[in-house]
Length: 440
Image (cartoon, rainbow, N blue to C red; front, side, top):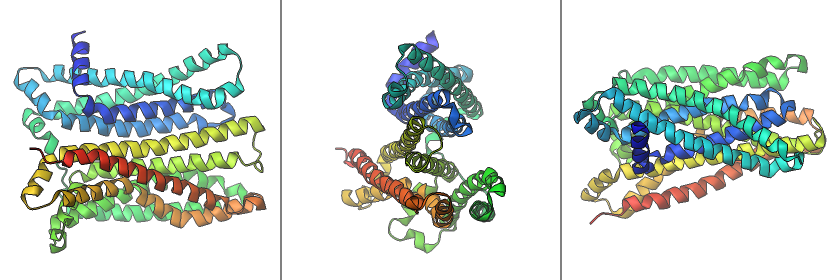
């Protein structure tokens, strides 16, 4: 009971630090709730719908593992003071985990309510007219979401507990300023070779999907996701490792203009940044696949199931794709706003060195723009190589009235991305600008 009261008090006092965690947890749990509702009602969609909550759970574990580490950095000195005052490390760990679990439970209630409301508003009232089924679906979907939530919390709590056990007081005092390092700066070349190999394997799978007859199509389709995921992760490890190596080699070019400051900001935690960019890249791919699949299922020329069920499923896929897109931009924007707030002291030093407020604001906007767009780089590369091949395959399968529909839908999705990018960049810039005002 004492832990619960302390955790509630600390959570309220440190709500700004938990904002990123709350947004990510609530939105992703809402997506899991929608997915579970689809899995319960739309069993005819098969493995694709049933596996969706599992995929989102895996993404959420990675993201929340990062946000948990982020919160540890934000409150590192506070925890160090607790230890100096005599609080045991195990007791401090339990207190912090209690905060995480209490906030997570609140996010679970909010996420399941929002997710069920989204599902019910769009589809449920059209399919069912008996109120008894409302409670059945809500209870069963909440149970499935609760299982996912408990699994996420157990894994993340275990990782945070391990992190706490390894930290000493001195490390906590400097945890907020911790910068990841690489002993061998040439390691990025290995990641580059791995990326090239896996990317070639993935392109080979796409060529197999395009040119092989239908009887052999199952083989490249079933294994394509493996080289795809590895190539995305290896690409960002190679890219950030290359930037880190350039910074460590201290070439004269990085000292020109503001390159050193930008490169230092990008590569200070390059390993974590590589993982995050890979996850967000997969998030965009999954969002686009859901969006395009949903639009295709709404086409009258395509008949896979009965018309009512197909319209419902297509609308569900579009909604999930949009939710993933909003999640991507919301989390990245919040992260950039918090980073601007953390660098207030650096901005003050830059003023002492002669930088004007407009120059600092322009520099911050450049960082926000780069961080928002960096997960899209690999997506663009994949589109350049794969979309023409897949579009040709779709043209051979679909009616002539739907020729080049894959290119049109992909173009429409990226138009939505550009629009969302402009909106969120403006929001992040305006909210971050308050940290740039010099204090009296």
